[in-house]
Image 1 (cartoon, rainbow over the protein chains, first blue to last red):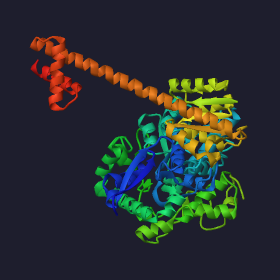
Image 2 (cartoon, each protein chain N blue to C red):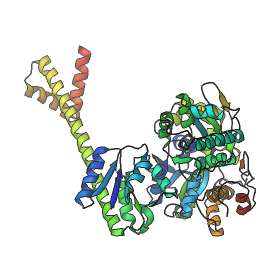
Image 3 (cartoon, rainbow over the protein chains, first blue to last red):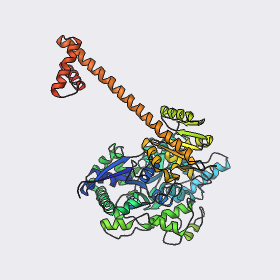
Image 4 (cartoon, rainbow over the protein chains, first blue to last red):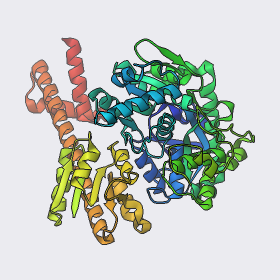
Amino acid sequence: MTGDAQVKIGFIPLVDAAALFIAAHKGFASAEGLDVELIREVSWANIRDKLAIGRFDAAHLLAPMAVASTLGLAHVRVPLAAPINLAMNGNAIAVSTALYAELTADGEAGDPAQSARALAKVVARRQAERREPLTFGMTFPFSTHNYQLRYWMAEGGIDPDQDLRLIVLPPPYMVENLARGQLDGFCVGAPWSSVAVDAGIGVILHFGCEIFDRAPEKVLALRESFADDDPNLVATLIRALDRGAAFVDDPQNLNEVSHILSRPEYVGVEAEIIRRVLTGHLRLDGRNEREDANYLIIGKDGAMRPDPRQAEWIYAQMLRWGQTRHSPAMADRAKSVLRSDLYEAAVGGSHHQREIGAFAGPAFDGRSYEDYLSAFAIGQRL
Amino acid sequence: MKIAIVDESPIRSLILEEGLREAGFAQVERIGEMHNLLKHIYAIDPDVILIDLENPSRDTLEQMFQVSRAVRRPIAMFVDQSDTASIQASVDAGVSAYIVDGLKKERIKSILDLCVSRFKAFSKLQDDLDRAKSDLEERKTIERAKGILMKAKKLSEEDAYKLMRGAAMRENKKIIEIARSVITAAEMFK
């Protein structure tokens, strides 16, 4: 290769872009002949649009957003290809200290089934007293955050479209709104729930991985046409990110990775907070802590291999919450976004992802969309 | 036609509002407060929403495409891809538009073009302001260095300036750099 290939990549400053930051910072990208320029963005809408018009060659993107863009949901149709996963899980549901007190008034709310039922009681009481409904924040309609919140609530008997308000807010505003009492809870990526906990205004109720086991969270997305026109470039990107992820996952590198990510050009928060996120060891409130190695998964156990099954799962969540109507053609198109073929061509392996589990409800195990959706009491049917 | 401008920079949104009014759009509302953004938007019920791309609340606006109870669903400017040039120009200028379905394409384009030129005018204004500020700082530094030399070497103002200019030419540096060195040196000799 003569001269490095220039690649512009947009990102949102979150810990789940760790493989991307490390691939660029540690020279894994340049070793592949890539001259990567990372561009920090403030909204997912900006990332999507700049990717669409070619200002970015690739981007750190919400996995459901890559599917939505390809299907043309709620926006213009721009087919995207995701040749590699950047992260699974990584979110947490936090509630205000006031709501937490209400949820635990009658007993424990330690597991999601308990807390969802407790939440349903609070919702019912508010309705009976004709008080304002609860308001929960999340980061984007096409996000795992949205699906995590909805799934959890619905298992308690709450219809998230009828019984409370779900609003999109930029993560820094969530903490502020929780403090002002305009928000009762939120589901957001790290480190924002920890910020609320440290400020003494919020309590982490559940890690995202307690709701869904290994849910697809972020992908590296490219325009489909761009990816198919230059498979060699895509392969070099995949290899660089694969090495970045391996570096992140090696416990020996924990301190170095935390410090690199803490730099202002990447995530820009204290290294200590990043270290806690990477190890899945979070403070829940003033007293308690919880540790879960699956809190945020970057590359371990073949997590980076994009699996069309993950796209089917995302598509099923979209159907359940009325974000799209079903057609076999749409389902196939959704599946085509997660490009295991490109991943395997670059780094080999044909390890399939495990099915995505949930704390309750029907398994997503290859049964038809119709069967899956009709097994839920709340949500759309086919 | 009602237009809402969502921008935390009051000067920029004022510049844009002025431009829109001059172009004959009488109903323009500015939103500078991002809390309760959707409430403001629903109250205004605009046909067009303009938002700057530095604004993280863009994602909040996107939610409107999802909420079925919203009376009118605005759609993004990308809806007609035939005019990619003006979409690219607006993204590069740092502004995005959301438009309620059914508006004529020419009118949208004229609004978008106006946004681009006003946003560019604003960033030029900002650049000019930054430059003026740093020019002023430099002049102050040079004055101070001149004063130090005049006092230390009993020079006239003109000779003190000539001394620095001579040094700058010899060392192939800018006069401001020499002035800074003079000040640093003087502080050390204090």
